[in-house]
Amino acid sequence: MIFVTVGTHEQQFDRLVRAVDDLAADGTVTEPVFIQTGYCTYKPRHCEWARFVPVPEMRSRMEEADVVITHGGPSSFIEAIAAGKVPVVVPRRANLGEHVNDHQIDFVREVAERKGGIVSVSDVALLPAAIEKARRITAGGTEFESHNAEFCRKLGLLIGGL
Image (cartoon, rainbow, N blue to C red; front, side, top):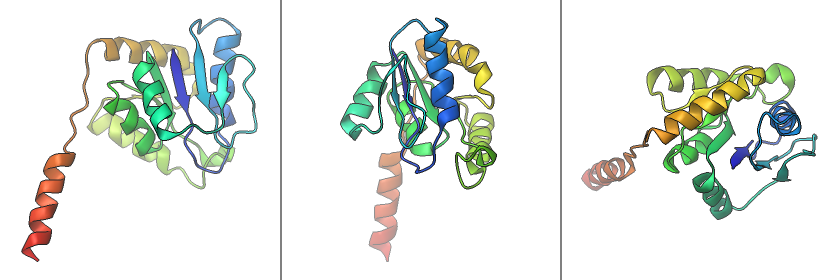
């Protein structure tokens, strides 16, 4: 299964939703696809979808998916990494009315170059190759290492010292 999330930002991300729906329509993607469409105006015709899903369902779908495709919001792709996936990340673009500026493009590029662990896609025409790349890397066992516990411990010490 492929799980797609465009997050909860109030601007449409029809470009990504339509691209994935087209891949299902033309048989490029043969497995089931679920898309969380948010504020998109395009309604998928070849994939299961919902505008929004509760957080526990989102996590469950990410864990069950073979591939997770997300927008460039860090919360979404970090959730996918935490679920053991190497996500395909498609940043929203301001010039297409998908966001107020291009911070997702810059952020996703920096994460891909400095940290890795994601497959960045700037052109949705490259989604089929990106999906296969993410599938291969995820199957290879790439894992996300969380530093939350150590951060919280150090923050607690810092606060305690005040």
